[in-house]
Amino acid sequence: MVKSDEEKIDLLTNILYSNHEILKMADTKSSFVMGISGIMLYSIVQVNKTGFPSYKIYLYSFAVLCLLISIISQLMTIYPRVGKNNYKSIFFYSDILKYQRKEYAKSITEIDSQKIIDDYIACIYDLAITQDIKFSWLNSGILFFIISIVAISYSFFL
Image 1 (tube, helix red, strand yellow):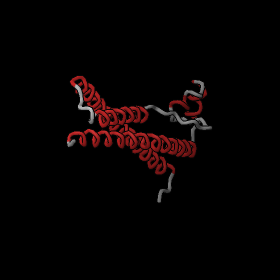
Image 2 (cartoon, helix red, strand yellow; image 1 turned 120 degrees about the horizontal axis):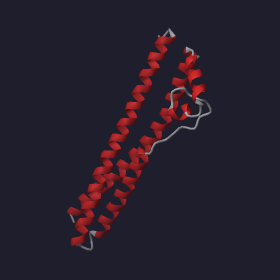
Image 3 (cartoon, helix red, strand yellow; image 1 turned 30 degrees about the horizontal axis):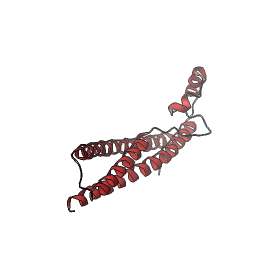
Image 4 (cartoon, one colour; image 1 turned 180 degrees about the horizontal axis):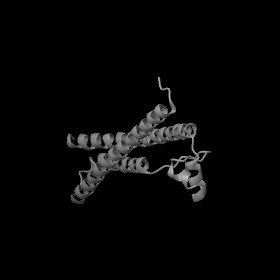
């Protein structure tokens, strides 16, 4: 059991760091899927210049649509979000900018451990909301990416 304020702050610091790493991982995955989707989209467009058999055009059109949705979903994953909160955090950049410079300096010099703990908890909670949104977009983008791969693969067997 965590007893001292210093131990609580260390624990919350590790939790916040771990959650930031999870966000980086989501952005990295999203960038990878978006890049592969772009390459596949380009390849389909280039093959289209030589012409598709008429019975495959619907599958390729469906695959292009799914790839476009996947790319848009991945862009929404990477899109930065700033939480809307009702407090002024001393850690989060958008909240820091709510302070005047002298007011921020004063709040830092007069900080107590309970304020640090409260700020960490608020930041971690806001980060969890952001993670939920990011992973929803990431998962939907991956789903449309997989559907497009299946549609393209199926066209090879026709």
